[in-house]
Amino acid sequence: MASMEIPMSLRPLHYFWTTFVRQWRSDISTTFLTPVLYLASIGLGLGHFIAHGRALASLGGENYLSFVAPALLVTTAMQVAVSRSTYDVYGCKNWWSGAYRSMLATPLSVGNIVTGHLVWIASRGLMASAFYLAVSAAFGAVHSPAAAADLLVGPAVALAFAAPIIGYAVTVRHEQPFVMIFRLVMVPLFLFSGTFFPISQLPAGLRSLAYALPLWHGVELSRGLYLGRLSSLAILGHSAYLLGVATIGVLAARSTYRRTLAR
Amino acid sequence: MTDPLVRARNLVKRFGDFVAVDHIDFDVLPGEAFGFLGPNGAGKSSTMRMIGATSPRSGGELTVLGWDPDQAGPHIRARLGVVPQEDNLDLELSVADNLYVYGRYFGIPRRQLRERMTELLAFAQLSERAQDRVNDLSGGMKRRLTIARSLVNEPALLLLDEPTTGLDPQARHLLWDRLHGLKRNGVTLLLTTHYMEEAEQLCDRLVVMDKGQIVAEGSPRELIANHVPKEVVELRFEEADAPGRAGRVDGLASHIEVLADRLLLYTEDGNQTVEAVLNRGLSPANVLVRRAGLEDVFLRLTGRQLLD
Image 1 (spheres, rainbow over the protein chains, first blue to last red):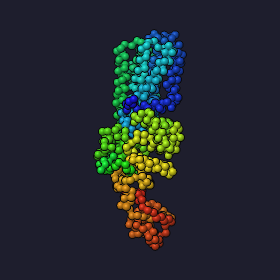
Image 2: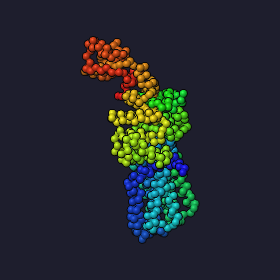
Image 3: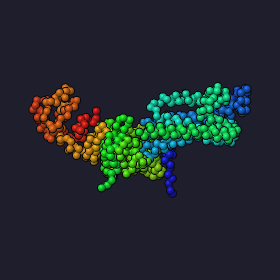
């Protein structure tokens, strides 16, 4: 039997997968537990009040759980991506893992390492999305088979965040900036990208900011798919936006990785 | 005449304005153990990283295994083994996982890799520890694992950057033993060190580097014969005033090095020199006559000691 050559860009996955298999227990809360808690408390608990209030109409007629569940899928993909692309990159570059330096001594190129790491983070986005989709379906929040396409939206959102962030993370000398990314980027986006209320509620300035950042596009895409009511044009537009950000991020990351690792 | 595995001409590495490697020439021949000897900051590691095709050169020519690293980095790296100065093992993973993951980077098929790992674990004397986390290993064991890992692709050329720095003497001797074994099996070794003993033990040929330049080249024996007399008399004094005494031993040796705490007198006949020193009425607290070594060559060539 001819042995199949694994493409260089996928070989780093051996490392990430091995580490994941050894350590998945510590990751379980972000990926798996938190979503369930959010769906129960906000989707069902808080949603119960909204279902009886005036706000329901502005959510598009569905219950609050159905409004918030698809958004939480995307925000989880973002959170997984941001945590995996900050501390993990720092660890891979520095002594306690040394993974990048190990890879660089092998036939793998810097470009292979960037691609490999991003494929891994996208896979983590996929795992989180798949789990989320299953749980929200169990909660009764999925209204269209089109929701299955969220299995692509989650990884796309993960990439749109991970690509620019790994490009930055590989350049830092300390971990402190990561806390700022969490506080000043991730948390505000999580709260104000149409996750919990439509962004039509935001003042005009903030609304344009939400349009400009990737999370809202992911949320819109996911929600439209869950409810089965998004035009093809909108799907195309949001997807193109996410992939555009990811592409620019990849190019930037390749350049910073090269400058940092191949000195 | 066989082609060299590594050939460098006018090789240069700059970091901004700093010239780490300053126009050096050398050839590494198949089957030999070639060393770069020099203090920290001499440019040894920068040279190694250029040869390892992980750091682009700033100027000059370099071929490794017949290829230009700028053009064929992945091809070169596929046939190199690299032992970096600092272990970059994954501390959280097991010994076996570290070997396995690394082997997979080279695209070695699973089954073949499993067989290879058994051999490598035995080579590194770590068979019993295969399932232990690397974090729990001693420094010497980690180093052996790093060396075992670098052999996973059966490299044509093994690059060892300071292979035994930071190890205790016992661990160091065990490693030297492993490296001698590799050499006997025809593996070409290229190593950097600032340990004289290591250079003398392992290297067939070496270059002495200082401030980015090669200041001497040859076998350890040639270097000693060409640059220093046979013997050295070390004089230590009660008060830390060796420089003050330097004048009083004038003419007693072909060359005198004045260190902070002692005087080194280079001479063909140590005992005779000691007698002459005592005849001048000097009473050093401690007198040592020894054979000249590479340390002395380095001191003679650069005016500085290797280990500060």
